[in-house]
Length: 330
Ligand SMILES: Cc1cc2nc3c(=O)[nH]c(=O)nc-3n(C[C@H](O)[C@H](O)[C@H](O)COP(=O)(O)O)c2cc1C
Image (cartoon, rainbow, N blue to C red; front, top):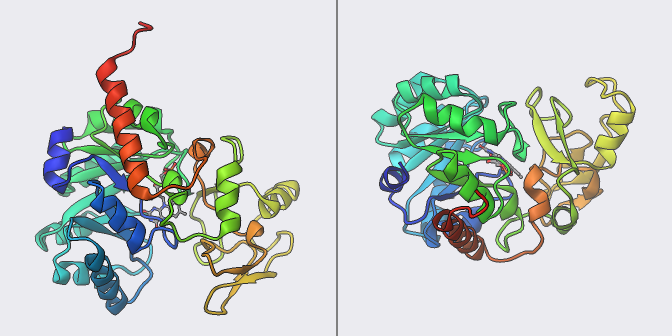
């Protein structure tokens, strides 16, 4: 199956860069592509002209295959048509299940990667023609679609479909990759570890917290950072905002400590309010610690900032060594 995944994506290594809105721009995605992996660039929430520009920018940096990540709970039709018009290799769809969109993307010549949170969704996506299933476990950082952990999710999804499955959530080093492959995954999709790549576009306060956080320092919440994207479960580092919210009894929107308070500014001057769904960029100002610092539970394995290409190579080589050596304890 891994060979099939590599054939479908036409890359050398079964390592995919997780799309991370705000954090994974063209430099990071191109670095993963140029290192032999498959890059996925988030371009959702943009006009179709901006999607075209985003694709062009990435093509300036790499001539390898990549996918554009689109969010099915926001308008996506124009963006999908632009991906088709631009002839990109793939489209990665998440936050929903729309068989007709998968069919439209396929008819437009795109390779479809569909993110799912359980085996039934994987079946539906595969029946609709998805080429690759991305199974995202509950450990994952950012918005988390399902509630099943990676170690239980991967074999269930692998057993449910005939197409290659890519494992996401908590995979941050070669051990995680080897484990996912042993569970039947054909490749891995890495997010949090790549937040500590030289190319990730995140604020230094956010990066420093990633470098120091333990596996117990994240908070999953149904609707904590609801401003801009309500009722979309997510995982982020525990911080002053999440602690005050927990102390207040995990209260609903409209009844939360310091709601609507402006806590910072985007680089373009727009306000960032408390409980906003927002990835702090290098030029974001204000109380960055209190913002949504998306992170998965694998964060304790992220201890240094190195180029994304080195992360890909290190994870790949370590996983290969582990998978080829077997386990002498048994
Ligand atoms: C900062 C950040 C932003 C994210 N943004 C997106 C996104 O725009 N689209 C998407 O499909 N997933 C997004 N995710 C989820 C990742 O693609 C991926 O599923 C997750 O990071 C995998 O788990 P890991 O962080 O443990 O590696 C985001 C995750 C993070 C950490």
